[in-house]
Length: 201
Ligand SMILES: [Fe+2]
Ligand SMILES: [Fe+2]
Image 1 (cartoon, rainbow, N blue to C red):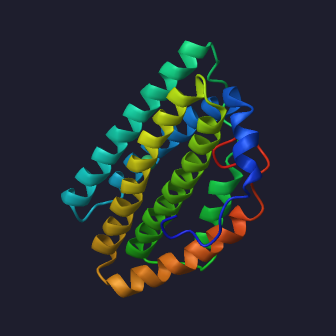
Image 2 (cartoon, rainbow, N blue to C red; image 1 turned 90 degrees about the vertical axis):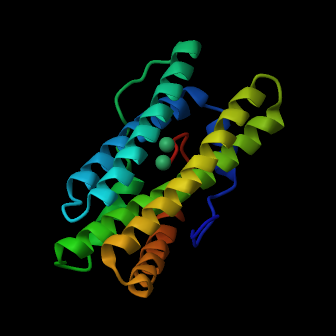
């Protein structure tokens, strides 16, 4: 899926579909973090209101997703709870920082690319989850349709964030090289996951 170098352990889908309360609560927190991250990136886009506007639009879409997931929690009587530590996202950020001190532009490019990879992985996970929900039939169908809808917009967010990284970085070949290196790191991190009922678990 998209630029991912490694697929999620196929056993994850059944684990996630078997504990929807945990998945939905975690998903709400993921959308909240995605919106907050988009705004935090907009705040760093000092050079261009065009980039800032694109990130604000992204944040708005993530907030719409958040509201939709909060509705699902309410319909099912699931509490939002406190966010799980997202080791996946934290590890990926750490890997992106391990290349040492960078210019402000390169640091922003990296943050945009890390965001793009998280979108790509979420998109892959939504696809797997939708498949498992469809296979169950019954009321799983409606939730499967919800995830199929969302995965299309997360795929778009991936493209938007890569395009913004190229816009900010200015040198497409260099940004795509960097995306390749970060995607390889993301694949190593993702290889250790797949056992928990969390969007990035
Ligand atoms: Fe989203
Ligand atoms: Fe997204």
